[in-house]
Length: 405
Image 1 (cartoon, rainbow, N blue to C red):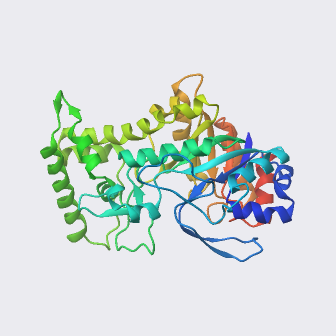
Image 2: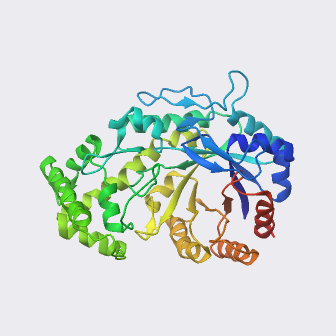
Image 3: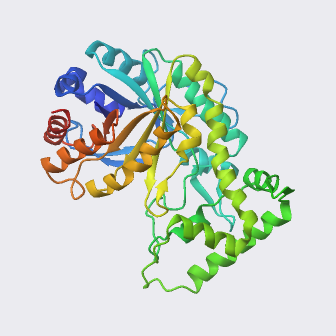
């Protein structure tokens, strides 16, 4: 079972004074996942020599964009020098010299910089509110942006794998700046708030076929009005001092059908089909010899993987399950959802667990050893550790020692 670690360009710059990538190799790591592009954030970096708190540039690339991105033009980060190799190019050279593999950790639809410049390209809820951090993957301009990003990254020599993060819709629960509300999140309101009714999604839903009949625009407009009414009842007439009821996925589906009619099932078809079409767009990258890894997370509210695994696994070489907020018991509950990707046949994808070893979710070496045993029990191929810049060195060394032994 292999060991990888996520990193940003400034982490690798600081790492040079700590032994460089050879130090990671000597600790037992096999691979580094470098952010090829990223979104905004405030990070506390314990061992960086230039300070503790870093505000990340929003929606920039750590390579030089060269392809045809159309409407949604990327912006190279200030980490990309005016001349000489970009951070992605430099990392490929340093990884090869240290005997490590390099994967490009690549963000798809999460881009507030572009979302604020092009609000019509964003997810639009039933009220018409735009989620500026979430580009809608059903829109042609967004598909072009994401596909060109992946192809540009794939052109870099030394990149063996591209790990796709935020490849579908980002829902309402994804935190925004100073996120505030008085209600505990529940699966029902989250689903209604996260469903996109932008022009592209509305047209696609209206053209879906249910029971031999095309849905039609008025039906979709009726669903949208129904979503608004249901959300008004839930929030305007609700009691924020009442704990939310837990709803399993089957009950959630039945409730959706009961409120909006059986044809609402086409919503699931739409949300399944769009990411799959996005993966079909990228098969030329695989044919060129670069592996694709689809990142998904275990959605505790809905009790399933955030992206549909079985239909996607024939289109990728690896599936990575992120469990950043789960404790070891939570990871144990989530792993069967990852393992379901193996059920497509003998040539199923490689499987990877991505975890963030920190308290209170992970407190001891016993927790780490149990994590390793769980991964071996489920025959996982790799574990990725989040994140080189966020973890102090004693923790990185402790994690590497426990997971490799």
